[in-house]
Amino acid sequence: MATTGLTEWAYPLAESLLAEPLPRRWAHSLGVAQRARLLAPILGEDAELLEAAAVLHDIGYSPDLAKTGFHPLDGARYLRDVAGADERVMRLVAHHSCAWMEAEARGLREELESEFPREQPHLADALCFCDMNTTPDGTPTNPVDRVNEIAGRYGADSLIGMFIRRAEPEILGCTARVLERLAAVKRQPM
Image 1 (tube, rainbow, N blue to C red):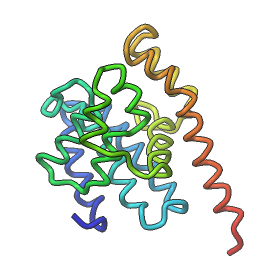
Image 2 (image 1 turned 45 degrees about the horizontal axis):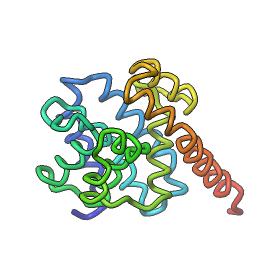
Image 3 (image 1 turned 180 degrees about the vertical axis):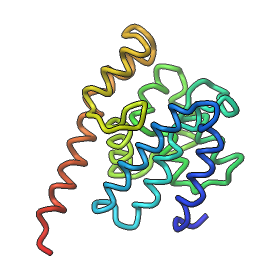
Image 4 (image 1 turned 30 degrees about the vertical axis):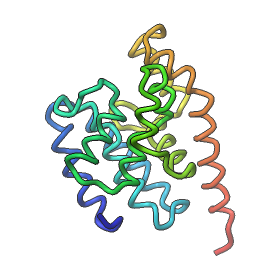
C-alpha cells in the first residue's frame, strides 16, 4: 500500500471497528489524529503515515479484534493479517506509547518485537506525543494529566497502572523531543 491515500483508508477502517462498540475510544482516536495533523511541519513526507497510525492506534480494543488483551499487538496483527496495511503503520500501532514496556509486563515483549520491528524513533515519539496529549474524550491535555488519568482509571496497582508509571519518564521524554523539534521548525527563517 502506498503511503499516499493512507488517511482515506485508515479513517473508515478505524471508524468501523471503534465507533459503535467503543464511541469514547473512537473520540480519543479522532483527537489523536487531530494532534498528528498539527505535527505535519516536523514530519514532512511521513505526516500522512503518522495521521493514519494515530487514528488506528487503538483498534486493538475493538471486541472483534481483542485476542491477547494487549491492544497494540491485537491491532497490529489485524492490520497485517486482515487489513493488508502498510508495514510502517502496523509497526507504529504495535509500538505506540511505550508499548514494549507493557508487553514486557505481560510476557509478550519477544512476540511483539519479533513480529513488528520498531519504527523510526522520531515517528514513535510523535505518536506517543499525540496519544499522551489527548484525553479519552479526544480533547487536548498534557502528558502528566494523561498519565494520572490512566493510572486512576485502571488503578495504581493494576498492570496498566504500574506500566504507565514506569513509562512516564519516557512519555515525558517523547513529548519534550517533539516540542523541541516543533520549536526548531518555528525558528527556521522563511
